[in-house]
Length: 330
Image (tube, rainbow, N blue to C red; front, side, top):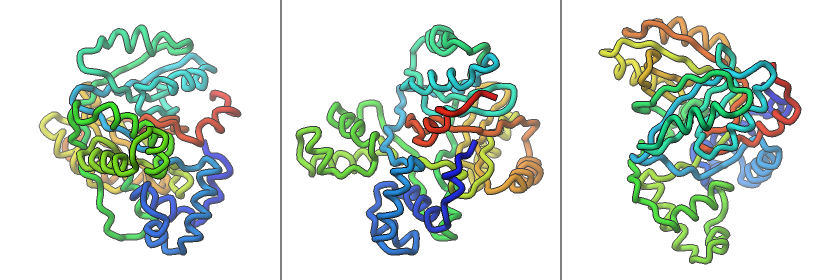
């Protein structure tokens, strides 16, 4: 699904958005340098993009060792997909949610505290939502890649450092840290002074604690944007069956591909899930027939096209609400 607004982004808007994906809290001066334009132009255009609901910057706490991730594929009764999606999107434990093509209608990634009863989550929770007929859940064993490298082609071939994998421990954040991150989850570009005033602490305290959490990998600043707005036609999720002895090697080779946004190992027969964002369907064909077909150990695959992403990084996408309000299930 793609709204008319997404078609209207010109090359400068796209560079500004891609620069915000490099660092969502960068100053307008830093964004202007990456986007190769003036500070005034960057500030004006970026504010327009925020106002249109095309982008959102959020500070997202990262999972700790006390949690596990489940990838859940859901099949819905005909005509209920949109209502089911709305209901699932409200659940705080859902990190990712997309409406997709294929034998399942929705894909949800769910954060579960270790030791929690999975029956309560799957049977009493998700499957209790009216409209859900069937679910398939796989435990995620290891994430090999999760970043916005795909969009950096918009900025050319510059050297943009990628974030280090998070190493946050369960007890690294105290109550004040969580309150600071909660304030910045609503607006990841909020000034530290404004957050300090809201929480009744000093600006230096907010800055110091946020930067420490960022350094320890306890928070990630993400910039949400529809891939179509940056000129990328195809968002595909591949489910790969891989020979166990080749699992890590295949995952690492996929992770090295710029168009791959997310790679995770799973416990089920489809042992790798790989999300790919590419400019055209021709690129998807090349990725399938050359990249995947050339990987030793890949035995089979299936794929879903992402029609609409409702949540990413626990954050509701700003454009999905507008699209859902006038959408009908297919």
